[in-house]
Image 1 (tube, rainbow, N blue to C red):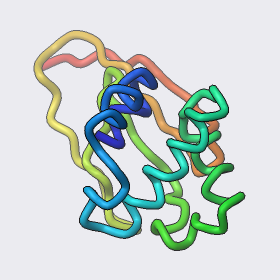
Image 2: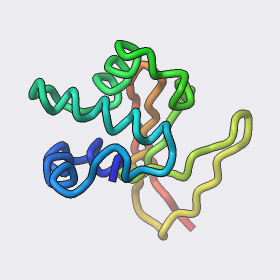
Image 3: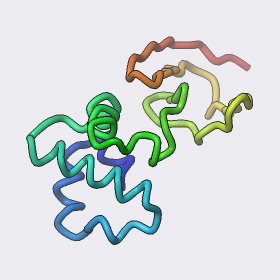
Length: 118
């Protein structure tokens, strides 16, 4: 649910009607939910940048695992989280084109479209 909110902010309002912070098992997820609730209450966008800023404001960034160096997406879908200093592997669906995006810890992104051939 928390990841879905980053894709579609409207998902938070729907989820908040049936979920509360204590519904999350991990404390880190509770703090992320709290930060999203604070942003939603102020009618601010919930994205990687605003969420990180809110976690910093509440002194919770390190408690939720700190900042990851890079996040990878293929055609807008996130790849599984990588382990530090480990290569990320991705199996394309087939030939054609794929849009690769990388997002750094500050929320800045870069992308490239690559051609996949057999």
